[in-house]
Image 1: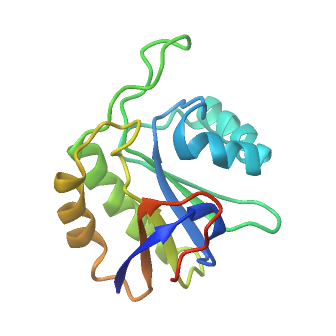
Image 2: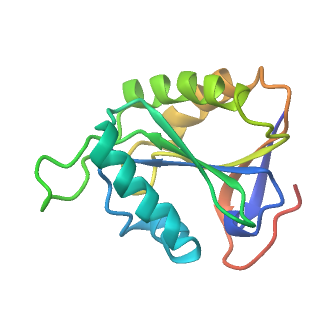
Length: 160
């Protein structure tokens, strides 16, 4: 079941948050920055993961810290070309592969609901009118609620 909501995804009651990043992302923009500020160990663990695993576009890395939701980090954007560069833009190909990998990853976690942003449309640069049908086609078959945070309202809990 997909439900579109308005509010602050950081206030979600869902078991997991799903967002888009790049391999070797610096978590300095958008939702990634907010997640880094709320759970500093998420970023530290991601840096370690990147150094040891060399993730690629289209992959998913999950993280669970104490007292927080599972965070599914979908590699929707191109990796920075050098360590001094910003992450590149997202692509529909990366998003499609990331959604396939997310479904596999969800099967390994006991997640009863997920909250997801208008993924890859902010810093990633994709058009929501393109992303939304891909999201719906990819996630409609899940047996858990999917809360899509379509409109952001800071510090407001959505009616999930």
